[in-house]
Length: 471
Image (tube, rainbow, N blue to C red):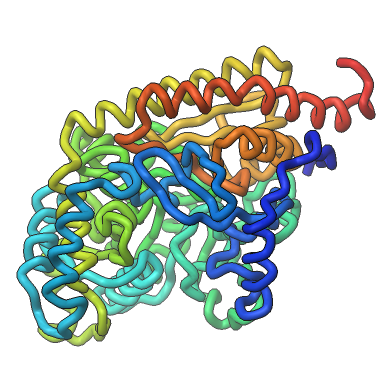
C-alpha cells in the first residue's frame, strides 16, 4: 500500500442539523446509519442527512443543495422524483401497498425484463443480496455441486459465502494491504466477523481479469464447481471493466465444465444500456449467462430485485421444483409499478443522454487532475466511471491494483467537492452515477467545482511525496 495522505482540505462546512440528526441516529442505530458506506468512515466528517431530491439535485436537512453523483447508488436512472414515476406510484399506493398474492404489475415487470435480456424466466425478490443468494442456491441445486468461484473485488451482496474479498463495502472498513502485492491468491477468507469459516470453505476467490487463474482452477477442480459468479462489469472496487472477451471466455469455460455462469447485473442491469452490460458485450459476441441477477434500476428507487435465466435451470425452483426460495414482499405492487414505469421510460434517448453526460464529466475530471499534477486513472464501464487517485499508470484491471490508490487524496477531493455542492460517493472504491436529469446546469456546476477539488488533492499529494514542499 502507498503511504496515505492525511491532509484535510480547508475548514469544511459544518452541517449543524445533519450533525444533530447523526448524533440522534448513533443512539438508536449501529454507527448511526443503515448501510455502512453512508457513515463517511472512509472520508471522515459528518454524513449529510437528505431531506429531498429533485432531478439531478439533493437537498439536505441544513438546506444545502448538491448535484447528486450517486443516484441512490445506481437505481435513479431518470433522476429524483420523476413526475411520471411518482404518478404511477401514487396510483399504486392508493390501491393498497401489499397483498401477499399475485398481481398484474409483477407479471408485466417480469415480461419487460425477459424482453430486454437473454433470460427465459425470472423470479422477483426484494434485494440484490437476496437475488445473488438465491441464484447461488439454484446453481448448486441444478448442478449437484458445491464450489462457488468469485473474483476479488466483486461484491454480490452480504451473503455469507460471498463475503470474501468483496470489494467496496469491506474495502472501506479494513486495510486492503492484506491482499499482498499481487492479489493472486486463490483462497477464501471470510471478510467480516460473524461469517463462519465453513461458510466460505466452498468459495474460491480469483483475481479479476486473469484468464490463466480461471483456466488453472477449472482444470484442477472443474467437476466440483457449481458456478462462477461475476459482476458483469465491476463497480465495487471502483469501475474495473472486463477486458475484451473476458465475459465470453468465462461463459465458454463454465459451459465446457458443466458449471453455470452467474452474471451479477444488480448494478449494471438496465443502467449501462437497455439490456445492461450483456447488451454491450454478450449481445454482440453471441454468448449468454446461465443466470443473471438484477436490482437497482429495475425497482425505480424501491426495494426490488430479481434473478433469472435458462428455463431448464429456473424450473428447479419451488413450487415447481425442489430448490426452495420464497419472499413475503417479493413482487410488491408499489415496487413493481415503480420499476415498470422506470423501464418503460428508459428509452434509447435516455441512455444516449446519460452516456454523453458521463463521457463529458469523466473527461473533465481527468483533464483537471492532469492540470493539477495529480497522478490518476479514470476508468469507465458503460456510463459508470470512477477515478483512482495516486495511481501512476493504468489500466486498473483487478482489486490489487485498485487497492493501490491513495484514499487520502480522494478524501481531500471528496470534501472539496462536497463543500461546493457536489455529492460524490463517500468512498474511493465506488462508481459514480449520472441520470437523465443531469443537464448542462448540473454538469456545469460539477465542472466548476473541479479546480478547487483538484487543488485539494494536489496538496494532499504534495504531503505524501515531498512532506508539503513544492513539486
